[in-house]
Image 1 (tube, rainbow, N blue to C red):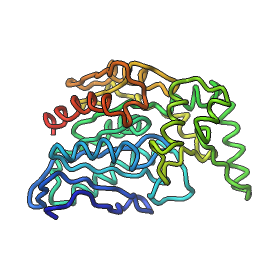
Image 2: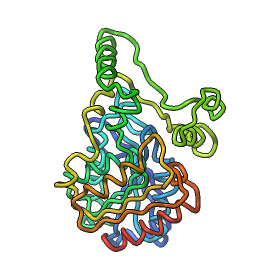
Image 3: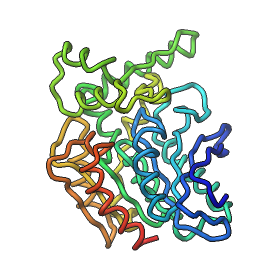
Image 4: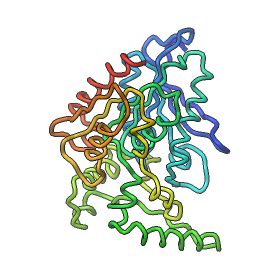
Length: 311
């Protein structure tokens, strides 16, 4: 495998497989042990969007092994029904990926870190609190999807949304069809026609619904009947007690509805980590930090030395 660059693997999860791409550094030698970083994709996204092609690839070029995976029920991973967005499963995915990594001879089990983007960042925060095999955590525009499910995603009517979810799940149990909601308009033109002005919603549509970021598995969809667990979950719960790993938080200074600026600031203030860094990228929006060269470079200029120091 001396000339390997990427390898696709299937990782055993609860009763299905997780799909993942491993990015190897130049001159990879499978007789050596490497620091390894798990890269987690945004909510409704897939491993080929920013987590893999941007961040995992960049970390591999700097001498680390990086692995980007699709969440259970999403992307090319298994699990039925499709498009479940459940924080319990999303956090457990990290442990299954680590189970795979610690069985690979080229992975140093004491040098495993996580880099997670947007909603994946929120799940990574939650996972790191109890998964002590994670030795360092980096987040890029981390989103707290649980809070969004109590606020903006449901027009600030969490109880009304939960009642509707309960009714839909009962209907499905009795044979009704499933309701899968696309989180975004089908195109930037449709977003403009709908009068959307929020920077995150508009730029998300431009990223996911055009050739800029569109991928076959980037579904941007939630199964409505399984969203209730999100409303009762919060990415930052117990961070003051359990989140002790070294932490590098990257946000942009142009906030939008998805709340990554707010989440990053709160995470920095609440985390028990003794070694933590907050990077605010000037002039950058949430989606600039997915793939735009200059903001991404600023993020990596902090994240790469962070991992080299702590892994």
